[in-house]
Every structure is written in C-alpha cells, then in structure tokens.
Image (cartoon, rainbow, N blue to C red; front, side):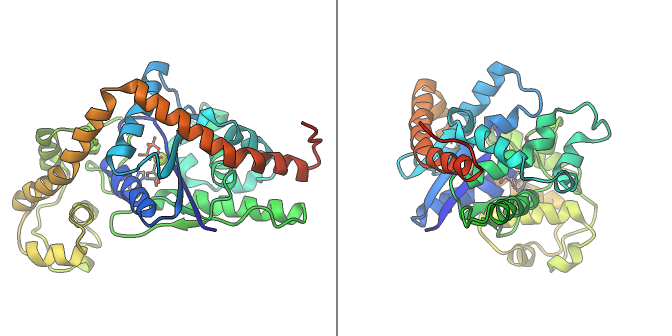
Length: 334
Ligand code: ATP
Ligand code: MG
C-alpha cells in the first residue's frame, strides 16, 4: 500500500521555496486520501549549529506552517523527528550499509560544506543516511521533495537495495521521489544560480512565509533581474535564470503554465511584472501567514499535536526497526 513520507528542517523561517516545492504538494497528497507522514526533522537541523531556543521556536513555526498550508494532524501524521527513536536508531544501522564512495558524491554536502569541509560536523556528512532512515523506517513508497533532494532519495534506494541484497531479504521497498510542476526548484532572488534556502544568510534572497505584504513587494522589487522585456516563450529565457525564476514562481503561485504567464506579459518589463508577481504572492501567502500566527498564539497546543503525531509515528516505525535489527543478527528478546 502506498505511504508518503517527507520532511522539512526547522532550521530557519520557511520560505516560498519550501511552500511551492514541499508544503503545497504535501497538502495535495493528503487530500488524495493516501497515508501521509510529515516530519519536522530537528535531528537534521542540528547538523549545523542551532541555538536551542531558536530551534524550539523554529520547530513550532514549521508545525504552524504545515497546518496553515492545509496539513490536518487528524489525517496526516505530523511530528518532530527527535521524539521518535526509530530515526536515530535506523540511521546508525544504515550508516553501516551506505558506502563512503556514495556519500562522497552528494552535491548538497559539497554545497553546504563549501571550501572549509574539514570544519563541518560529521552529522552534515552523514545527513543522507539519516534521511534514508527517515523514509525506510516507515516503509514509505513515495517521497514528495523539491528537485534539490532528488539525489538523496536515489541514495535511499541504493541503501535499501544493498540491505535487501546483503541480507537476502525483500524487506525495504524502494521509495520513489515525487517531483512535479514548475518551480520545484525556486531560485534565490539575489542569484539565479543558487536555490532559495531558509538558511541563506541573506534575508533578501528569499520570501519567508512570515513576511508581510510590504516586505514581499519590496523583496521582489529588489530581486535581481536583467533589463530585457519578457519574451513570448520559455525557451527564450534559457540564458536568463533570474527572469525564468520569477516567471516560474508566478506560474506556480497562480496555478498556471509558465507559457500562459508569458503570453500575458510578453513585451512588458520587470517594472510592471514585479508588482503583479508581488500581488499574486501576497494573495497566496497572506492567508497562510495569518493562520500561522493564530496557531503560534498557542504553543502548548502545537507541542501537544506534535506529541500525538510522534506516538502514531512510533507505532509504525518501532516494529520496522526492531525487525531490521533482527534481520542483521542482533538478539531481540524484549
Ligand atoms: P536549508 O537551507 O536549511 O537546507 P531548505 O530551504 O533547503 O533549508 P529543507 O528543509 O532542506 O529546506 O527542505 C525541505 C523541503 O523543501 C524539501 O522537500 C526540499 O526539496 C524543498 N525545498 C527547499 N528549498 C527549495 C526550493 N528553493 N525550491 C523548491 N523546493 C525546495
Ligand atoms: Mg535544504
């Protein structure tokens, strides 16, 4: 039976990229009636330094964003990762299955470690094995992610296949990455070659789900672009990454095809396109940030919801990790 798993790191304010690449799709999956498990991956967040008070706040904010985007904790399992022991436990078991050579090919590690890769945490390097554990601990079959996480889901498949092969079992299903629609990689507003990230040091590079209407309009106004007017079709935007990004964002927010957006704005410059883009963004994000604020007014209720979700998540993942240990030859007598 299909089961969807996905997660988001509570490593900062959630962005427009997280909304279009993840939250919006998570809500759609839930509404299709499939079993959906959504995790605030705090164990992933601490692979880079997190101030403890900030981490707590960011986790509640992410939970509020999920619910504001339409994830219903009665219909989806919504929880923070560290409250369910299966994730850290299975990650260790899978560390012993994953190969160093595979990990060395992960582009996210290279991007995040940068030039100073000797000084980053061991956890940042092992991150993809923890992500494999997150998915496999639920025997998840589908993983909706943005384009940037596709390589990690492919690694998860490799780890699952090697486990099944080495132990001669057919235990872990190979999960499918689910990536669809325009703007599955929303790019930075300052640099069209970098993806929009909640952990980017520049706040001007992204739209946060908590930004108010004036801030959203101002960030789009200042977004880097070129001086050319918009062309009539997407092919002509091949070498104009900043322009292409803004058109894709418009299309994704308005639920339109990028070609239809261009048909309407052909010949116009950014002086008229950017305010139109800000208007669509405010009409979509305004109600979301309003609902987030309502949830955040009661943090104890958010914590209660996460605790309940964690209990349900443990009910699924604990037998799967116990069975994994048993398959590997560890004594299971309690
Ligand atoms: P960080 O900078 O801390 O890595 P992030 O913004 O990349 O934060 P993640 O928590 O790593 O967010 O990813 C959560 C989900 O959001 C994943 O499914 C990821 O693919 C998706 N996502 C992240 N950034 C983008 C983006 N710019 N465009 C589309 N999807 C994105
Ligand atoms: Mg990321």
